[in-house]
Amino acid sequence: MEQTLETPDVRGPAEAAAEPRLLASEVIERLRDMIVQGELAPGTKLNERVLCERLRHSRTPVREAIKYLASEGLVELVPNRGAIVTPITAVAVREMFVVMGALEGLAGELACANASDADIAEIRALHYQMLVHHARGELAEYFRYNQQIHLRLVECTGNVTLANTYRALNGHVRRARYMANLSRERWDAAVAEHEEILNALMRRDSVKLQALLRNHLGNKMVVVMEALSKQSTEIM
View 1 (spheres, rainbow, N blue to C red):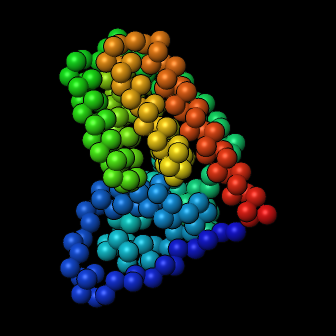
View 2 (cartoon, rainbow, N blue to C red):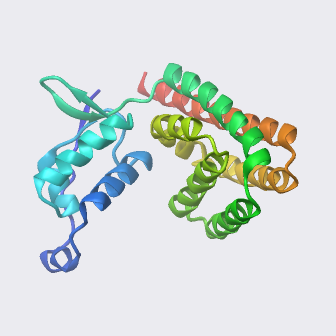
């Protein structure tokens, strides 16, 4: 059943007025976070008026943000119905994770050969920042550093085509990756896997790193598929 975004703003007038207006780029980032973190569920119809109130911005940047996120695959523009949060299906998740696993495996191989010592040091620093948020149980903050790690790993391969392809597909996969960490057991396991990934990168062990990255994505896919199956059962 299609949901509609009609959640009222529960803040008082003074509190709302005290909040700064978001920049156009921040509107995109905030709306993306609302979708990725499940605040806007799959299938939700995006009401521009309500979004303008929640994001404290005019309709034009909100509309542009919706179009931008449609290019990332997070929003679906439906003729005569407006925009909805793109539904997540088991078939789409399986296909995307298979491709992402191949891309990250290739990235691991190329990064071991082409990453500079400074690149690896930066990824290591991001990893330790990510661990801080894991220890605090701050999933949203953890996830931002997690995504930066995966993106920096791809960027330091020196292959622009690979990096651009990865960015384009990652927009589709981002929600599913976030869903996988909603299980604390899986979240803890993912952190342990990241420790191994970092160690393999620091050793420049391309064979090990390829396998770890593919398995990392594969494990996430299993958790997401189980979650989708459970949701389907509950709806029935």
